[in-house]
Image (cartoon, rainbow, N blue to C red):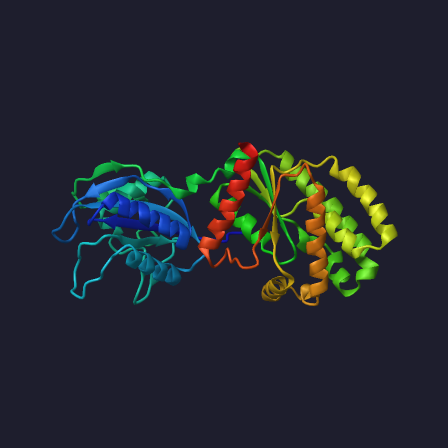
Length: 381
């Protein structure tokens, strides 16, 4: 499940403090457009296509949830914020910052406002040289040639000078220093969306709850009294098996593990859905299983108020969820919050995301990452 678009951006500046302009540009892209995954070295190159001061250029690999046209509109906003003034005259002009979309998911896009891949990229050494720094598996979607192949046939004889490295803001986050993070939340809180984005941005092994495979779930929503106990038992056994299997299988190519649930959610929902006698039996089973479970280095609970949860549930359109009541969601929230308070040995953080949109608003996503990062720092310091 991929939640992002993979975008290659070229950034350049030939006015003012060029290195600072590039640094500020990277930071704004990271906060406004998407997660900056890779940053090339900065290169000085002569102005291309006109006579002017030399440029500093770099290439970025960015993961963004936005489509190409929206990405372009946000690029224009960033250029304006960094002082770029677009002249009325035709032709190339000096600029404090210039941002071009070089590639977007390997797609071919041709609209009045956007041509992708960039029609001149194969002719520009200041694009190809820093693209080689990224060392990504990429081929030109029209020419079907790799960056290395394009370099060998490029007619641009410009002399480029390596200026040095540029800071990548993603390196401020040290999530990979832990082994296991669990993201939890009520129905519709966004736990799967957030877990998926973090796994993609930070190269983590992703464990997603297999709720869609549970045959009792639609039956429970239609007849909760009859199907509550088999539903909760089936969830408990499935969660135990999935987590123990996935956490025991070490992945050499991933830096850590992130899951969109924790085993004790079983107890939270069981307390709300089961009668007193059934819950006592269930709690006995749970306590035996829980002792065998690995504990996360950080447990994140995403709180959303019931009104926002109901809107999210309606938007995702699962038919068997549409009759969920606000009162039920409120009970689940209270169950989580009360239980977290009793878990003194669990490193946890509660984040109220009722006013956040970490899908459409990159700044909200960065805010949540900062809260997680700060909590991890508090644990390790």
